[in-house]
Image 1: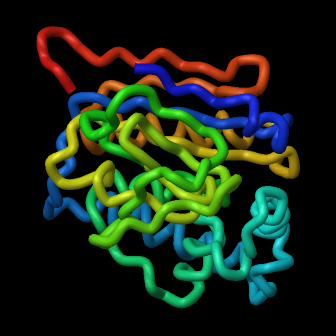
Image 2: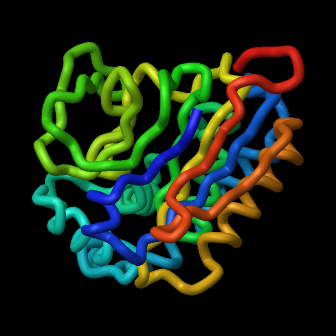
Length: 242
């Protein structure tokens, strides 16, 4: 399979960068070991310090994403970027462990104040694409059962079946979610020009290291931009299908 970023995305966000971590052969079942819980708790504390009572809509970590959402025609007060939602949850004390891989990418997201998400590689059909919606893509949100197709023109991740994540990083699909049974995954971290140089690479490197150390995975990383908009991802590793 390939991960492709289309020209209609680059026409809106020519200087965006997309970090990718591929993780294979890990175990994602909950465990009694509290190390990941401690990492997540420390990241939550860091996020509370970063927010420091600021209004989320104007905070430097959030305002660029609100502006980006306006560029593709949705109301950022209604459709919040994943980093805004995560920071709000951290400040409100609502973050709880989900499963080890999700907890690790939330840790990195809060530490670097960047949106981060992940999908089960085995559930993706055909190529993964970052593009703009036609409005006809099928989308059942995480935990849902009813089709909620995207707004025409919104930025989304999709595969051959339909949308995987709507409004760039607002809400993920249920069918590709990371579960306790997931053993191979793609994790994506997104950055806009407002972010510090090197911040995205540091976030990808940290996430890969944490997955290696805590879940026993084999990982690789890549950074995609307008000059390098495609990544080949092998469907088969050794003798096993994903």
